[in-house]
Image (cartoon, rainbow, N blue to C red; front, side, top):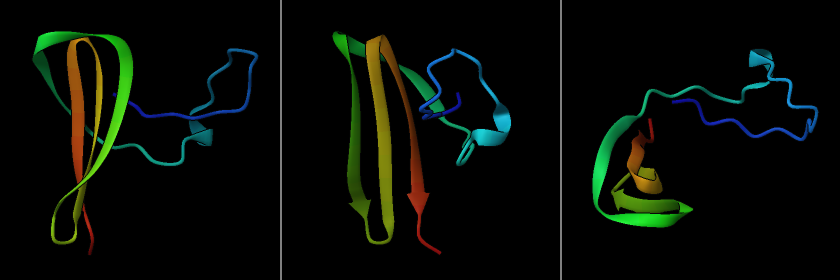
Length: 66
């Protein structure tokens, strides 16, 4: 999954505009989410996570400070 923000409203995707690409984990939610949700959390010393939920799906990744 690629996390991509862009101000280009033409619908054209250009990979060189990506800020970062990060492989994410993927799983299923036990209770479906009707709306797309994004969560950021401090999960441990020097670690944070981003979670994205929609319907029965969740994608997440943990970032660690170097």
